[in-house]
Figure 1 (tube, helix red, strand yellow):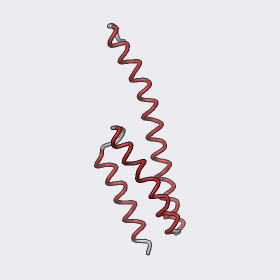
Figure 2 (figure 1 turned 90 degrees about the horizontal axis):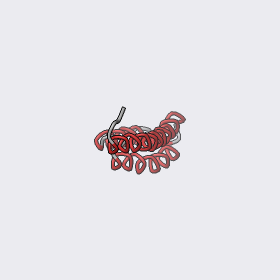
Figure 3 (figure 1 turned 180 degrees about the horizontal axis):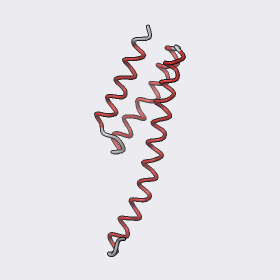
Figure 4 (figure 1 turned 90 degrees about the vertical axis):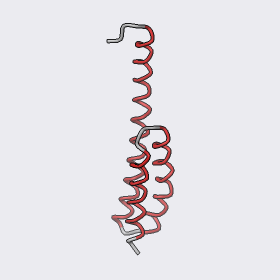
Length: 87
């Protein structure tokens, strides 16, 4: 347990940041899931539209430090590749 005043404050901040990051991570997973469901259904237009909304969400989470930038880029790239292969 934190003893100093600054350590107690850091612990409080960590709790709130963890909650925010959890929300961001969950939102990104939902966006990616929508793309994957559209790909599974075989609807290329819906998949492309879903990717257009998922890509900024992935990039934003990488910028905020929730996920690594290369992880976000890899996810976007793989989803785009799967959509392109649907043709």
